Amino acid sequence: MSNIVNKNTDESNQQAMASSVEAPSYTQKQTFGQLLRGDLGFLPVFLTLLIIVVYFTATPPAGIFLQPRNFSNLLQQSVQTGITALGVVPVLLLAEVDLSLAVVGTFGAVVMGILSERMGVPATAAIAAGILAGALAGAINGFFIAVLRIPSFIVTLAAYIFYQGAVLSLLAPQDTLIIHNPTIVNIAGSSTSFLPDWLGIGLPIVLLIVYAVSVFYDQTIRKRNGLRTKSMPQLVGRIVLVAAIVLGVVFTLENTPSPTPGLYLGVPTGVAIFMILILIVWLVLTKTTYGRHIYAAGGNAEAARRAGINITMIRITVFTLCSGLAAVAGVIQASRANSVATAISPVLTLQAIAAAVIGGVSLFGGKGSAWAIILGTLIITSLANGLSLQSRGTDVQFMIQGAVLLLAVTADALIRRAQARSGR
View 1 (cartoon, rainbow, N blue to C red):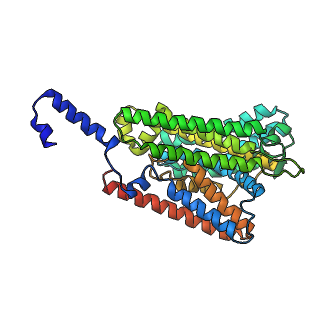
View 2 (tube, rainbow, N blue to C red):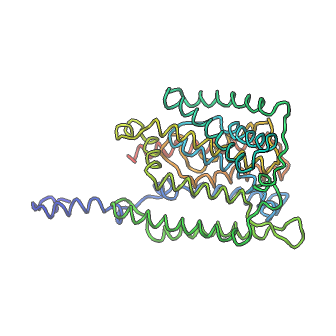
């Protein structure tokens, strides 16, 4: 650099500035620890999932865990937790929390069930009303949090209590309302709730193409702006790994035997909806100004406000989105159970938060991806599924899930401290 500084021409100074900006893209090397904290941050989570799969495959009852039928059931079991966790992501990106997700999801499903079964409203309108009811609940939460500046912990805890009472009131005098509408049941609750083969194979391929194009587009934009970029082998390896996992899952599902001899089940509709929602949320968070504002507000709310970002609007819409997705999860679960009930899952909210955090979304805001919840959700669901196959009680399941969550949060905190010390 001293040779450059000694040249007193404007041209050489401009070249020095350009080289200082572009150097990280091509010459700056990263240590293994930096890779784990950055671009390869998903690997520890993936390896954890791999260890869980190997353990439950090798231990009694050996071989059942990865059988196509159990694998299909596992993915269907993960949909409610996964979609709820997807709603958690933008909330955590703001360094906030929502404790009302489980009951708001049930509230939306109950609204749908009552409109459909008691009032004869068409299925499409009933489903839309249930999702809107959940979104409205989130908007109210967001108003108290963003406008009245009440802590999200208190607001959403109060909402949990309120909507639990609302569910009891709406379903009274029943505890359970059976859903007979075939349109609702066919979403995820019948033997026909699977995509046809052409769509079950074609849709994942389309999603993979969109993902690959987006990855290369991001690389081009970062290179153009002089930001750190990945090497071509890293990009190709990442896409190949994702493609291998997705196509492997699709192959397994397409070869899942049906209870009817000679037939196969294919890709569950609920799983397809889950993946489409992840893609949409990911595109919103990463490809829109609104999504960038969420990350900015979560990273430093005061700096974002001074930059002209409407923090109030961001918070209200994020909680609206979160509760709306919880209602979608509630509708799919109601379809799978063919009913809505007053019983509220005591662990769904915590499992959703755990899935997001385990997947890499930081509790401290500003860091995480919508795709992260896939691995986190699979870890949570695989633990529950595998322990159930081993006839373990819910006490053991809860203790193990709690330990995994604690380890994930501890790792997140340690990584944050390491990044702060290194000035990142």
